[in-house]
Image (cartoon, rainbow, N blue to C red; front, top):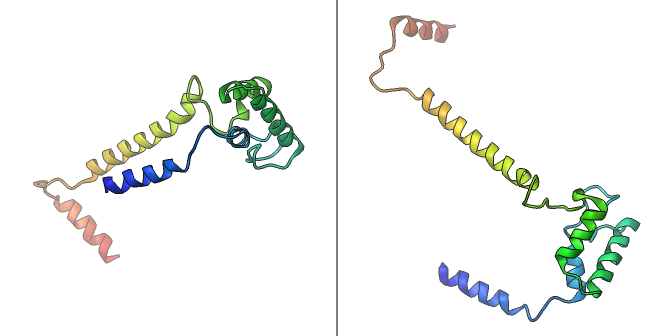
Amino acid sequence: MGLVLVTALAIGSQGRSGPPTEDQRVRRITSVIRCPTCSGLSADQSDAPAAMSIRDEVRRRVQEGETDGQIKGYLVGRFGGDILLQPEAEGVGVLVWALPLLGVGGAVAGLALVLRRSRVRPGRQVSDADRALVEKALRS
């Protein structure tokens, strides 16, 4: 299985030759930028005028030699942190990533606790009153 993984990685990495083109960089950056006027679309996916304006601005900045981080920083500074489709993993953005994991962990721990408590423990005797109550319920 490891051999298959190494072979697949080797074959996949051969397709990449050299640095990304200008178009590839523009698409990569605009794919993680939210369209300001659309609901749930990236600036790369949308045909709205605002998205086209963002693509043009990103292309201009790529041509000027700015890094991806500088371009995203400019857009965040202009539009606010909500312009990013994926929140940053620092500051308050860490909560966006951590809270779901903590929630799932808490749910699993709670479920384990409930299942542990509801387990029938060996050696425990059922009282005559409980047995009569069950028999009465089954007859009804």
